[in-house]
Length: 490
Image (cartoon, rainbow, N blue to C red):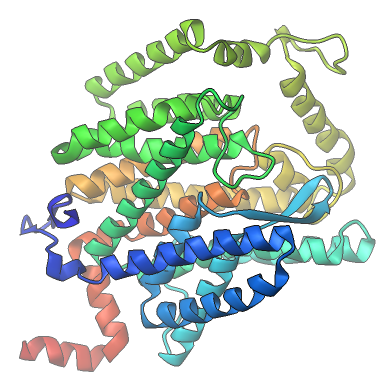
């Protein structure tokens, strides 16, 4: 039973348990959401196979039902988005500068849920943007995205349709951030969203473990051609959340440990070197944030287990790790300093040099615009090329503000569950920052969505714990004087 899994202790030391009466609507929400996920899978499959006559009416009906359900309760739409993050099919619509234009079920869900939420806010006359440390940097960054891409369109460097597609796709994540920031005010919502994240991770783990030995590298369900780096980044984030909970939330430690051990082999078999690098960053952040000797011992144990797995585990893991330092004759670049590079790392370094030597010097301030020029497998070099120094500065400003807000929440919250969630987010955040060196971690929807979804929760986690978020919500509903009058009467 969910109500027996997550007890919450407010900072006032009052023990509060979520009871069945508090979450009586969850079951039907999950059923409805699963219905939408199945519909999305069927629709995409039929659409790809050419059965347009079947897809369009079903899509229309499903969209109408989702709009109505989300308008009644926004949590339903958010649950649908959480479940679809790794369980949605994709439909390739073209490419831009080496970048595939891929539409997934969660793209459609996010658009539907976002517009429904905005309509609901307009009807209720509630401002959709709540105050947060990220509002200004996100707003300025969006303006720079539009400006640099519009300039690229005028210069002919950017396709109008594809450029706008990727700009709007990136803005989707920030809309999700503000939607969760606005909507999440109660402890039971945080618990519900965390449970859904873990359930989705377990489903992905079942899929991955069932395919061990059948595929060379693990990839997510419905991945099309497959992107192991994407699955590696997602699992890095989920495993970090679970790791933080294991450290702080003792009541369900063994269950969480089993989930961790269940997902770990799938993570290793993605053979994603960027994810392995991110793992070491997460472990380092774990030690630095907690400053706990037991954590240091656990981290050393994990590192030893990783090394043993590389040395004596499946040969593909050893070949993949050592292959990063084994060059081939056909390579354009074989060494960086005294370090020998394999084909894939060498190709990345060559692409980085191309950005620094060709693209950046020509347009250093605002960049070339989204999708302009060659595609590069690095979040930071891609941002530099597309939005210049200003965009890169704003990107790091956003990341810094989010890190500080999460660290502040981690220090303030007192309940073990919230403490573990904030810790897990911090170490997952650190891991993704290093994962992004060799991947576009913060624009990949299957990584960026859970990152921004729980990032919004991190910003207001302390207010949720103390009940301040609920009070602000009531104040917003009834107006200041009416709300105070109601409180005085009660």
